[in-house]
Amino acid sequence: MSNSKRILVTGGAGFLGSHLCRRLVAEGHDVICLDNFFTSQKTNIADLLSQPNFELIRHDITLPIFLEVDQIYNLACPAAPGHYQYNPIKTMKTSVLGAIHVLGMAKRCRARVLQASTSEVYGDPEVHPQPETYRGAVNPIGPRACYDEGKRAAETLFMDYHRQNGLDVRIVRIFNTYGPGMHPYDGRVVSNFIRQALRGEDITIFGSGSQTRSFCYCDDLIEGLVRMMNSPSDCIGPINLGNPDEFTIRQLAELVIEMTGARSRMVSQPLPADDPTQRKPDITLARQRLGWQPTIPLSEGLRRTVDWFRAIRWSDYRPPTPNY
Ligand code: NAD
Ligand code: UDP
Image (cartoon, rainbow, N blue to C red; front, side, top):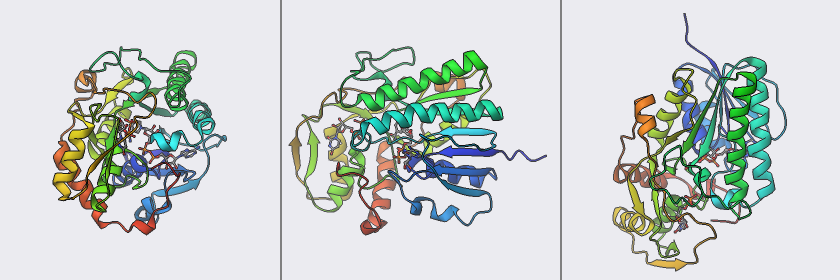
């Protein structure tokens, strides 16, 4: 008997979504990629378009859609700060209405549905590293709130559909993830530093550069997502997925400069409001429940990412927003 499933990936043309679709198509599943191409483009999934088990739907998840599927990965949402702050009201609608629409679909089809939540639900954390039990320190009225609170509301909806309707849900909290296929103009720190280094431009350090992040390579993250989706039914989450190796932003800049051989200077720019000062996942739960942990260290992941950035044609990419 075939184990092939009908799987919907919302946000499937994006950075993580395209890697996930590629993996699921390779496994022989019948994959539907839904995207409105706000922060992505068709070329990200061009290699999949000729596959008989891949289907593309241009659709905005803030509007209802009726499909018959067995599993749903809900990734549709702008993820880079410059992208989600560009139209904050739309960001909140995407998180909340998007969650309602995929949950409604999952209820009708009896599908299992996974929510791509985020470490941003912890806000600017006072607990370090962050375990799933930490309830976070989010500024509900700040510029990041559209994303943080939108994702928090989506988690609430997932848990309420689970408790009220017995829905089979999964919640993962993803920490900073990078790799080939990131939008080169997304304004995130890894893509900015590599782009700036390869072009010999100044490397923009926001604030002192002493703030920390913990960077997970995309292949590791996708493995975690797939394991979570296929975990036993009592494994609902939320569960942290990320790489616990923590770096300051200045250390990241030094690594990129060294790896690219760039002659770029580091220049300071103002720290954006509510920028978290520290972030590092406690992945005890992922280790225990999923037998998962990252395998690719930052030096190796960055090398692969730099190689990818060296090979792309910059003119193929249109900045989704002016914020990069
Ligand atoms: P991305 O911006 O590359 O991908 C998001 C995709 O969703 C894009 O293809 C975009 O066009 C699509 N999209 C946005 N709004 C939509 C809408 N209204 N309807 C349909 N499609 C829409 O970002 P990513 O890094 O691939 O992130 C994917 C998911 O993972 C997001 O939900 C994000 O919040 C979550 N996440 C990512 C990270 C990370 O570091 N990459 C960290 C935490 C959480
Ligand atoms: N950052 C930076 N220079 C840049 C882009 C980002 O110093 O050109 C900093 C940003 O202020 C934050 C960290 O890098 O402290 C990570 O930013 P990113 O936008 O990648 O993701 P975040 O984790 O803040 O959502």
